[in-house]
Image 1 (tube, rainbow, N blue to C red):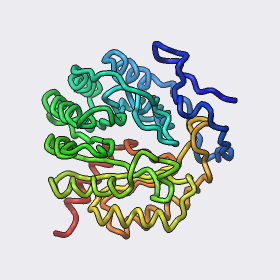
Image 2 (cartoon, rainbow, N blue to C red):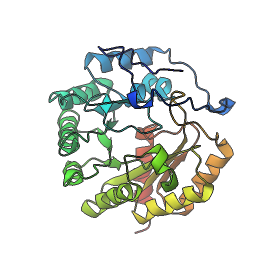
Image 3 (cartoon, rainbow, N blue to C red):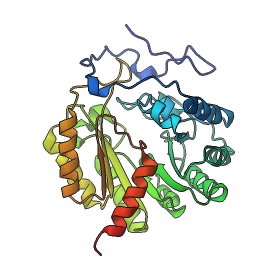
Image 4 (cartoon, rainbow, N blue to C red):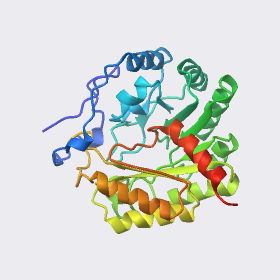
Length: 319
């Protein structure tokens, strides 16, 4: 039996995913050549890691085991994960530590802003763990972080990747009022897979969350993403596209699910690059302003470049 152990925190014998320890191993097929990436070894990667650590910050790049960390950190691009490294949800796909989070660090918004300045970021992505333990789900902390970045780096555009704020009245409005340039919330998978992949969430609540952003502030770009390879059918992916367009979502990302450990959901299938190209073509025909679909696509991968394209696509759209 494999036991997933946290070897980083101050209590190294605590399982990183205690709810998964007693599950049987879920075996995935071998990775195809198109999914492999090089280990990060560059100077740029090391410099980014130093800035992150000096400011006491957490990144989803590390916590979620993103395969693009070497490429992004070499360019001094990082996605900051606020409100700690411990999530109150236990999704079957995610490698972020689960359990009861600690108290919020009230200085964190300023630390994120300072790291944004030191990295010289033109576009910053801020995400978080789920904080179901907080009355507002952490919405006010998101808003404070947005305002701190605006004050320190007024030219930097800001993208937030938020939790679903399920049963948190007024939380969404708090984040939208802080006026991020992009509001991202990932659906993660198709509705039929929610009970096994994302059991703590509700598919149509997430769709409605994105729709509400546009109703409150039409100027904010909205974005969402899913993983494939979890057992979904092609027609189900197409239906997700339709649901997101009905919510007026601008930007769709589709990437290959990769299994963090054998205790997580297995990869059912590796989707080929040609199939991703097909998804991208279909998504554009449905009206998305921007689509990124490839095996290694992740929500914040190339986020700055993609935001520039997104803004240009809106400007070029007939009114």
